[in-house]
Amino acid sequence: MNRNFRISLLVVALGTASLSAGDFAVANKRFQEGDFAGAASTYEQILTMESPRASVYYNLGNTYFRLGKFGPAILAYERARILTPRDPDLRINLARARKDASVTDESPLDPRVNAVVSELSPNEWSWLLASAALAIGALTIVGGIIRLPLHWTRRTLGFLLCCIAVSATALYLRRTESSRGVIISDATAVRISPFEQAESTATLRPGQIIQIGAQQSEFHYIESPSSGLHGWVADRDFSAVIPHQP
Image (cartoon, rainbow, N blue to C red; front, side, top):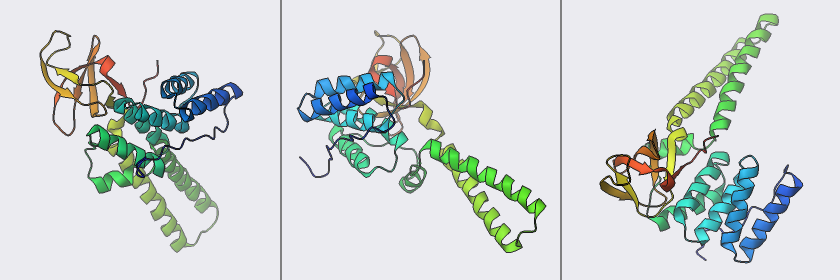
């Protein structure tokens, strides 16, 4: 096995029900025994029964990678990264899956900017923004009751305002993540109109990132950030990174 790919499973499932923990152990055992199809099915079942967990998505990504299904593998890794953006093994595996699938991240941001705004999850940026705003409010109230040192107040206020500015900027730059998708089918056709019989103008690779637009019937209008391709893709051929709630 290539050293740049980590196949170890995340086996700790804290705070889950005993049934879910048992299913998680069964899925891990199937993976270790080489029953990757059975493991994938069990991980998928867990995700339909409970809230999303990074450990399940990570293991699911490993399973699909071993099955050679790069689209579903990259989708699972992308979903895990939303929850645990700083996991080093996850980053390595996602990079390896992209390399083997011959696709890129396709982020519209400069790589250095993307590295900064991706350091925290959207929820973490939101918590930082809210916490800094609340701290400013508390500082204002306390300052109105007791006399605080002026230099300390200025430094603290400056730090909190910086946190708010950085958090708000990161959330703004990541605003398109809610419409981000991953191609999961092989040789997905991009059509000029939302019909099966419509002419195909290009094909997309499994694992390729797209931006999801308007829906018509069983098709969505999509754009590919890197190639500039745009057109209609069947719903069966892609999945949103952030699953839509029914």
